[in-house]
Image (cartoon, rainbow, N blue to C red; front, side, top):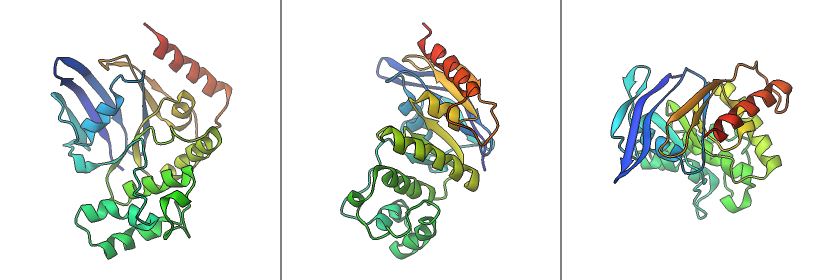
Length: 242
């Protein structure tokens, strides 16, 4: 488990500021959500952490040392599974790109199929999977690369409500089992409250940190409770503030 600190991260594209002095932290094994208006710069923040975008200012450290793009396992909004590859070959793809031989990559991915609820589907094609299974396969592909921190960019946004709820409960259980440190982008306030130790609220573009809200409810949590509803109302008010 690793501790992540982002200090004063800023990014400008041309004459437009996208991120301004963004700071946040996640302690070892925590899940920290980032919420904010659409288009405010959340995905740009994750792209900077993943090494896909070079920030203009600021630092990113993991356990006190400068982070690199390979420190983070990055799962974008779409699952990006290749339809012509089997599920096993899709999950091993990141390792192959990193230089691991195909047989060795498949051998590393195979033991994760059982805990990820994908056992028996190793030889299937992505179109044969449900939406939730595709997302689990995409997360398996991310996790198998043994990165220290997971960046999940709206991973359940395209799922129906029932499947999404099941995936939220599954992710909470898996995070506890594997001890991942996770940064999560979400537009779902209820999801943020249910999953998070802390929620970072960004304002409209250019993104600045408007507030950081601690979710101090004990686990395991209920998706709907009076305490959760109070936190949801607090976050909604922050998002709506001028």
